[in-house]
Image (cartoon, rainbow, N blue to C red; front, top):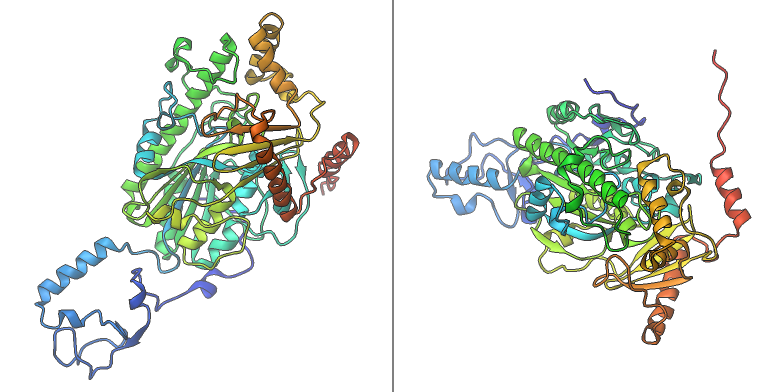
Length: 536
């Protein structure tokens, strides 16, 4: 039995009941219909004395006229063929949605994206069958704002979740359930929540841990299976979000021994030290657990015969909790992998088209048959289904304010990063606390930098970024070569600066970095807890 948060006041059954809606998604020419009269000709050329009044025929192109002289057995054979090729959705809603989202996993952590030490056969197989998007960005590379962007289709300044520790109150924000429930959907989530916006409540499905920081995480798909079964019994389509907790620290659930230190590929912007290799091994082991969960999801879909009418979306979330990863605007933090699979409907191809997490909700609404909800996000449906569509966005806005004020604009080739206070040391306090394993490499790197010039340069680039950095992220995805000082790029930098400020202005952001006191005051105000009511 699943547990659920309370529903909104709107009644589903009265608002979404469509008894005359056909179960099959017929082509457009079949949608404008009329009722056959008993005097009309039957599909087999005789008066239709027994033809039900509810039978439907297109006004312009009769579904039955081409079969007027066809044998009854042949007709039903063709009808069965149509049923195979056009999946029967629930009475309410369009295709089902299953969304798997990882935790602290960047785009490059998988075999399908070139990580040689990865053990991700299920994700790699899914990638080979999906629309594979390798340049899928979050506006803020932190758990809470990323999920707020994902579930609302709005950028941080509009949804109010600016960082894990910084929130501003917003009214009228709608979440994915607000958009899909009126279209006939059951919307539920199992696992990590980190989200509380919108008027409609997302059902809580048991099975996955809601806490990403816990040790020895366990999971079960029984709750998901029960939820899907109940939705199908009601005749509703469903949207199920599986919010995994891997590969979030403490990195103690996976089997680290599967990843010997000698086989580890250390990313080029890291220092190759023993603890860096061990951190990569631990993280890869957690990604392996995430891969098993993807495999189990696909097994569930096959077992419940969901593949023909269900869209499966995999999102890796943001990057690993390491310098220039999570909490930063760099590719290793803000860039994710997105896989979209619908058997026979979504194209199987790899694309470098730019997209964002806020694009997901408009995409779901589009596939569900709803109107454009007018959000910051843009539907990906055409990109996923049309061979002619090759691009999606011209640029992406990245908008970090905590722990450091860093903004960025990403185009098809370049990224410009604007650091508001380059005079500060840009290493997050989490990396100096030493109470988490991911903080250990930084201490080792600092020691290495005392005697190694190459190490010193890498550490200095992390600690003291320039006011503006420019990277060719196609040829240099780990942002090693800063192009901002080259004369041939000065016009490009000026153009990108103007575009970045316009994007910020359009979504309500200030183009002036806050002062130290203002930034501190804003954070404290946002996190001020309301006093608890005395217990009765």
